[in-house]
Length: 263
Length: 241
Image (cartoon, rainbow over all chains, first blue to last red; front, top):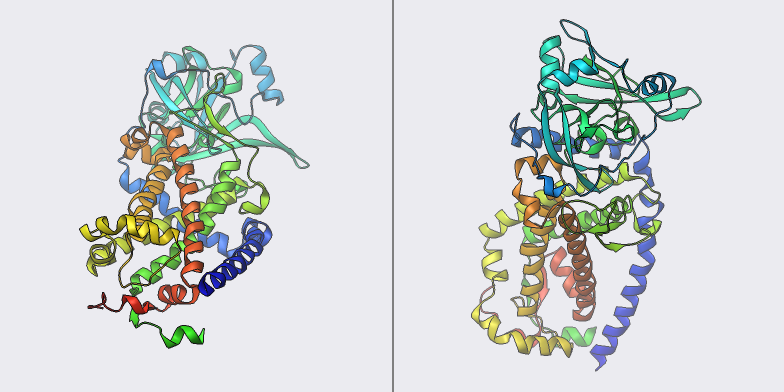
């Protein structure tokens, strides 16, 4: 009996102690990790680069992301991020239904080129029904049709020193005091040359809607949604992105997200 | 306390170094994984079944406003930092499980301490009765209920939370396309990930309560120094240590 009373007392004490410790846990105690150049944060990010290395080791260059069937398409692709670009250049193109649009491909290439939408539409295309996974946690299955980026890269001739394809976009996701920040995103050449990496111009058998990235968006099926830049204006082949914007290689990477979004 | 030492049982070496070290690494990992996980969940605070989220139709099975800031790391809405913290501790958590598994096969912790025996089956009902009466005897070996709880966490919940976590990775989906399908699709896997988290929290609550009831000093000593004092009545059944 005396043992039981002791236990009850210590149970009460322990629960009070843990109740007092709980708010400590969540709230501000670990907010220092939000600071961009905090040493602990840097250490964690360094460790997380293991994910990129591990997945590059496990994934062969052309291993495909799962593809689905028509029966799995239950809705249109959920639009996210920018859905209505309002930069002058984009609005001018949109007004003519992108008839004047040209994709520019340059940087570390043998032959910088421009491609009209008609030219892109007449190139051999790939159609795939894939699941789009957003970093927020949701997923959506849709059918995408477009030209494999590999073909475009073949035409322009990638120089050996190139390591990444950088997508420069029309949409200003953010308007700061210093002006508009246009979306930018980059992938390595393994993903750029992956068979499912396409510049999509059609979705669910219709021309790509504006809210989903018209006239062209890239699909990078083995990574999360934010890698799949919409409203592509120009593709630049680069060897290094440390001098671009804040040096992390993409709009969201510059804002603390992983550059490699395979998880 | 002095009364206890008078008729106390033998002090034995109970927990091996690998058990103690991995236990505390997991404790730290799970603390950060839970709170950063709730941060990540808050970016889309609903759960679904199947492969996708219904935007033009309804397939949510659970929906809340989001967890309060005192339950998340960081305290403000910050998915990017939540992911940095979560994925960092996920690596350590999974690596520790591999280390534990290899070490515990090697030092026979799994075979000797965790695998249920026929004797456990026989003692199962009496053990439930003892627990309900809070009659907690300190023996050399785990009781049947302890084996069930620890074995369930180590062999079911830990592997499940890693597998469902990897099911949400688009890269791993290309490596192992069957993995999310095992759970009924990526959103189902996310739901199972959440349920396993809740079960681990429930385990933690019971675990803490049992430690307090069974005598926190003795229980904590065994998982810190490895030394554990047996109940006097347990002497007879402690032939080998």
